[in-house]
Length: 621
Image 1 (cartoon, rainbow, N blue to C red):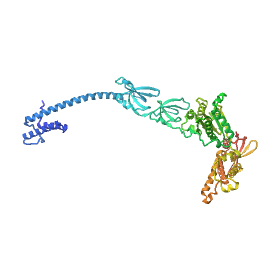
Image 2: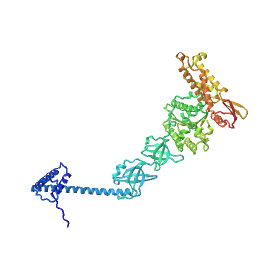
Image 3: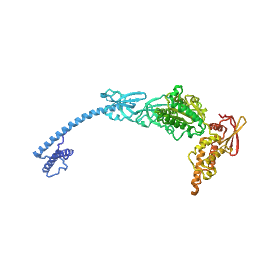
Image 4: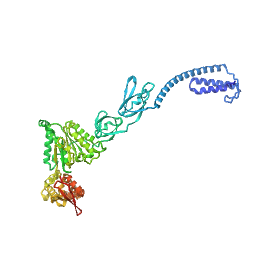
């Protein structure tokens, strides 16, 4: 039998001291316990010849404790016992709560660690009353719902459309088969890039790919919906959400612009006959549509302007927008405005990712129709049409893109959608390269106008004078010599034109198959752009000389004939540098320049005094 060691008074005092240390020093119970310990220490000291209680006690001591001290100690222990019971009861209650929460946590952990997790993309959250909150998720074409645990509701209320959610795919203790447990911080980044055809409020898009069907998709909430415009390309995730703007459409050249009121028919030189035809075919049917109905005629949908570069095709189209809108305002009394969309060639349609060109064509027509619905007039101007609408299956555009552009263009022109108050202008220098289907009547063959070169002195002079409608300073000596500034200016222009036609400004010499020869000079290839360039450069020469002259000579300074001749020489040298030197390239170049004539046998070019004879079997058409 093990003999238990007797409890000494010193042990008992240490026990009481530990109890005291665990109590709040300001508590009454702690104060009472402190007083009892002091009393016991006093009794201990008196019974042990004053030895300190802190000394090491090697054996049991008999200590006489006064009755009063014992009563105090008994009362204190009673209070300690009562407090301990209360603490135990509180701890037992907390233990029950902890036990219940632990079991719940264990169930959740078992779910999280169990196999069979599924993923879905968040679409919406539903409150199903007594059934709690549920998430509607999408996985490809499949849509399903998962339950949200009550403690996770606030977290999942932050979910954004298109965001990934992880859920269990096993049965819970409540009998539910799927439970959402993680809102993942990512969106789907895999999918297909498509062009935006139409923006549908509040958060949907109509999109389409090359030769693919049009579909409606929702926009994920990580994408700024307000920044999406028709023609943009967006990434459509495998779950059917637009999750990223891949490429903003470059709208600088496709932007709908109000007509430039500074350009009118008076700015277009040498084209009086074409202007009359254009006004007759465009203005009258739009102004009086009832007359067209009476005689079963339709207003033109498309106009084609054919001519060499720099001969005023674009200016004529812009003037048509302004003048037609002005004419309709005056005749109808309505506030009709003219707008135009200038498509500056294939780059404006095929820019970015191949496969969205047809979407851009749709966008262009869609923007025009929306503005026309407001009662305004809209011209869509396609420059370099021979490159954009080239004959199908034989063009320079890769991967069948050209074929799709032509197909989509024709579809829009055929009235699949209303084109009232919308007129399409094609500008081209090679009509023969445009797909024949584009130039049919009721498309862009309703009116085809030939915009020729100003290849006569009278036409060149008419255009040149338009660049001097605002007064310019003529040298006083020239005014005195010719009698007036106007006559001096006409003299400068006449001499400049004469020099243009001179053999000194030869570009090439052609020998035709009938045995005749012709010298092609700069004058034969003159254009509105070249004429404008001569006028602008001559003005700059006179300006520079005026700035450099002394104060006493400034009053005399002004334009002189030499300014025009210098400008002509500069333009001629630039033209020679751009003239191709091989027989094939030179023949094609002359065709683009609109040079027509008989079938060519030889092209003779002159370079640095050496005459080179080369064969060319092409035909000027």
